[in-house]
Amino acid sequence: MTKGDREREAKTETSAGAMAKAGFYAELTARNAGVVPGADQWALRTATVLVAGCGSIGGAVVEPLTRLGLQKFVLADPGTYELNNLNRQSATVADLDRNKALLAGARVRAINPHASVDVFTEGVTPQTVEKLTASCQVIIDGVDVTTPEGWRAKLLLHHQAVRRRLPLITGWDMAGTQYVRCYDYRHVREPFAGAIGPHDTDRYDMWELLRRAVPLRHVPTDMLAEIRANHARTDYSFPQVAYTAMAFGVISSHMVVRLLTGRRVRPEVRFDVHQKARPFGERWRTRARWPVELGALLPELLRLARRRGAAS
Image (cartoon, rainbow, N blue to C red; front, side, top):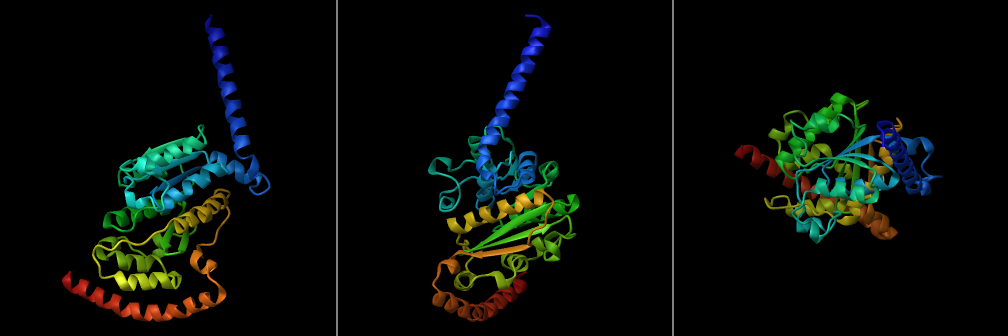
């Protein structure tokens, strides 16, 4: 075989591979037609999305985006799966102690073997943040908020999003409520829209940072009661359930599609699964309890803040 024959054969194989890839994508997304416009589908096919934090909410958006037709992912998470993650995260017992970003990438490729996935098992750090955001058009922030290290990584990510003028979507699981927040840093010029400053992650504890990030009006009644009962515990972990985490994937995957085509989205979307399922009377009784729970909680939080301030 001559050199020219080998070159022609290579071109034929490349062309056949490209046709197979195009045919696979067309069939994968065929049932999107009529709901996902052609321009949106093209954006999904060509854009890159960063998912930083691939556990609860970050992990919930990876699969819907893949099935919608997103083909280029950047996935970052330093964490591994623990048994208590399995109540809500896309993992099995066989995945315990394995890196979340690596497994999210494997799920993407299991659905679409032609997808491009870059994985950063270091997570969001000063050394990785520029590489993470270099090629993406939208950021999903699923970074942990239960540790000081997580908050510092989250703030670093938001600073970089501001610098690169990238829209960023994050979410907060609160009992049966999913509060989705889009910081469209194409228009918003401060991280967290100014609610959390550059040194606040060192100055404040988790409760104060959460209070600044999530307006009290969005915290549901059952979460206020849960916080009141447990806020003083040093070993407390927030309750999180599958349907609330999945709600983030449902809402944010559609928001990503809109943002990729240059459209704006509502900055706040709140969906309370519990209230949607309750009968009318129970819904109103739950709403009536909200100011009572808040009134009982605020003095406790103020006392706790004073004690912590005195100790520091």
